[in-house]
Image: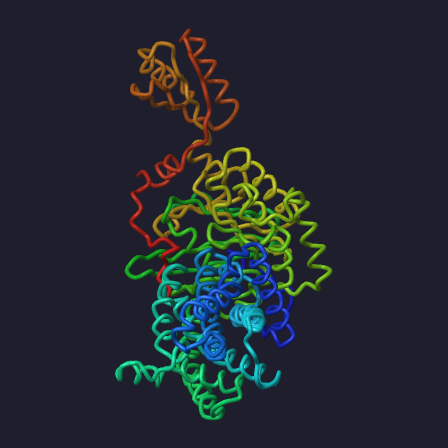
Length: 270
Length: 340
């Protein structure tokens, strides 16, 4: 055995630094967006779902629920904004899962990049998708007669709140993405969790007519608070501070519990 | 472990080791995927790691590319320790594997550009490097198509190009031609030989003796996570018998007589199988081949056909261990590798 071992070419230290991390996150975000270009169907959830939900609920149930469709539009659309953030957050887990499955993650892991870059770029891409989705939802709703009764600042605050809540759900989504075997399984489980969360809330209908046991669920469901906060912000009616506080507390709590779990799991796998 | 020959350091003491692996152990549950592997790759050479499915070849590559941590032992690549200096180590290696893959939804160009940026090349340089490598690997025409539309051979070439972006000093090729047709396989071999000519050190895993013979200077044979032989390819070949000449006599009844005749003349040992109707003669070189043909022809045996073949993995194992390849114990496949 020879003892003359190849001398390291560069004696630089192993830290990547902020500019390096930003560059890596930028390159990976670009990758996530390029993937959408190659697979436009993956944008259905961001582009079509808000439109479909709005049309379906306003015209099918609107009259029956609120007496007339215009009243129901004002009720439903703010709530849908919150739901949109949630749906997109779930896509982070699906994407992460398929990166692990296809071996792309292995390629990234053999490169000298910080492992957080992969996660951050997923979040960045989903945020962009989310912004597009919000714009489509509000734009479409306004076309069919939805009115923002307050101002642009309140619209931004509503979107911001939906994003903050969505970001906290991203950690759960990532955890699912790493724990489950396939992207389909992640989607399945996400649906299973999302459906009762969405419908067992004040997004689609006022909760007063629901049975007591369901009301106690809708009361603690953060999506109810998010819908109430959005309605208050966009319609200029009702208390704003209280539901906003509840959403922020929920977001902080979910993040506090699931972010460390997701990060630990990610570190273990990478 | 059989030491076939002490590999002489033919380039003198100035040549260092690009890869040094000592006593690497890796368990998956109760299965020992790697059971104390030692190996060395000298700078600028190609080491072939030969072994059947489940021998631990891919696990070894994954340890050496920092994808998994070994349970025991040390591994140093390009002067960097896999456990203590993973980030620096990643700058010195390239990996083309069965598992580390390109992004199917990106075009060939975008895949290479992305990796360039992740390796901290400035934008312009990343663009230039991607274009250059696409050209080199004959993918320029397909540069803008998504990788999922590529044929198997194009995919493998893109994989190779991806691992070359950072001009790695050490390249791991994990079964680079498994599943490729012979023509595409030759293309990949040509590329690998070009990289080696440019000074890249290569660690190549393979199941094919032929591939090892084509590409490698030295060989390490592993089985069930253990090194069972190592040395120069030429030495191993001499031991295994390089090639096998297969002779099909016009009259199968001649087989025993032909084998006896070759033995008596001291030309070569030969075995035959009445089932296949073939006489198998181990050959080490041209002279011996000529001698065998001469003896058989001189005795007037009618020959219906002849062919030469390189020894199979089975024959290599038989020569080294005296036993054929054991049925591999179920080793957890990497796709289902326990991750938690």
